[in-house]
Amino acid sequence: MQLYLPIAEMAVNIFVLLATGLAVGFVSGMFGVGGGFLMTPLWMFLGVSPGVAVTSVASHVTASSFSGALSYWRRRSVDIQMTSILLSGGLLGTVSGVWVFTKLRTLGQLDLLIKFSYLIMLTVVGSLMLIESILAIVRIR
Image (cartoon, rainbow, N blue to C red; front, side):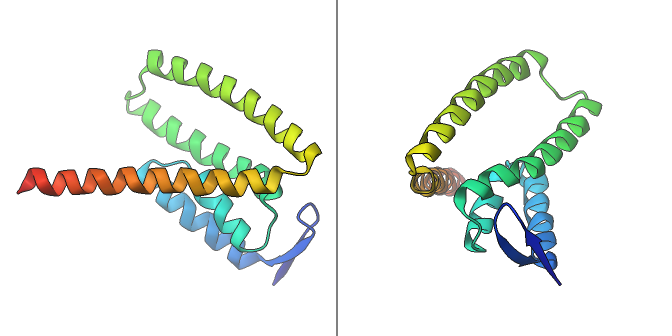
């Protein structure tokens, strides 16, 4: 069953979209990671342009972040002071990110920056996870 996405200007199988949402939501819930850095590359692999993938994933990230925060709030495990500081930094980062996003779109360099940013981010995260895993193995021995 195909679903036409007018902004992305393409048709995608609705079950593929549901499966990616389910898989990324599951991984996000299990490991506490943001779904955006997982969902955006998946959508780009499906042929959605990077700019559209980044902006479309925002609703998924918002929903999963809110439900996770609510769950932790109920357990009384949210540090309000840390949350406030992170929120202010996040808002500043978001505003500057939207500004850069808009400028790069007008210059026609948005897709290149998004792909390059994901390459760097996933390489750094993967490398840090590898180092942490090696150090954990060494500590055990």
